[in-house]
Length: 397
Ligand SMILES: Cc1ncc(COP(=O)(O)O)c(C=O)c1O
Figure 1: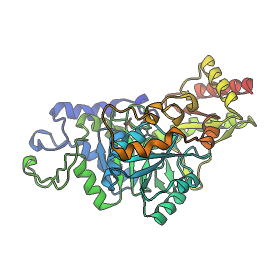
Figure 2: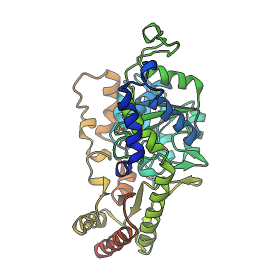
Figure 3: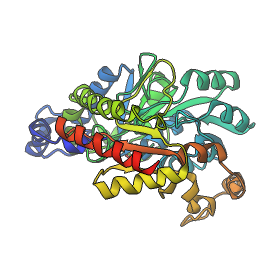
């Protein structure tokens, strides 16, 4: 997810506009900002690029996930069904609202298993949150049907998948709400930044207000604005937004390069009979941010990742042994190690984690390797990488 690889003239120009005026805040100071509204412009650009009615920029992807749930009315004591393979931010964002993350198994898409979701629904369930890990998606039609049948919110955590699509819709725009991250290692970056996406006009208004202390943004006197709801400060700065504005205009080019590099690596690995690839649901197209493949068993996956390291094949991850992305290593969540007291509902709601096992997910994550796709590789470098990867896998089988 290499936005960081491509910081150039366009990003410098947009950031310089902001430095020239000195107006680092997105709201107000109209007379002093030389007509530059970088956050507003980036929101408009996201709306037209991703074909969504409302994009609300916020400080980061974690805030975007929280805000996306809050604007849809998810809060204290509500259960949100989420995959056990995700980045910790997904459950942090749920817990920030006093809600309870209900972790369930993934399937061979490496995202939420609709079957596991069905089994996890209780009277307290308020939302289902697929996480489109490593550039590809869950079976969104199946999840939408479950949501419709049970009157639940479909909230997509698309933080790792900007540019991917499902049945012609950009990831993050299919559900009731979606969230994106523009942190430093995402496909496009603001340095730090995130966005809430929605086509629902009521949620859009909530997003605008919630991310800025509840301001209604009516009129041009900030101090005189009303506060119809309580909110927070999740505002992005103009400097961050300026960088993102240059990056989003390059999104389609970035995706095309990712696709080319991904395809070269995939074709090389396809020649090994024992290697299989994650399932992409019918009608889906990955963002090609990662190439994900399965090996026959955990032991082989561990050997392959060690061999990649030895051969200098960088940026490949075996999430089974990683502290941040898989439930196996989330002791701080299982033991509810907060710095502050949490509610009785959250404590009771998380108690299932003490005994729940995730055998189906272990089966997939244990055998999976995820390789980041970079933009900056030359053709020769991708070919050399493919050769080394094939060698490492064959030697480990
Ligand atoms: C799936 C997922 N959700 C949320 C986030 C949070 O994004 P941010 O780092 O911008 O807070 C990340 C970041 O890596 C992520 O991978």
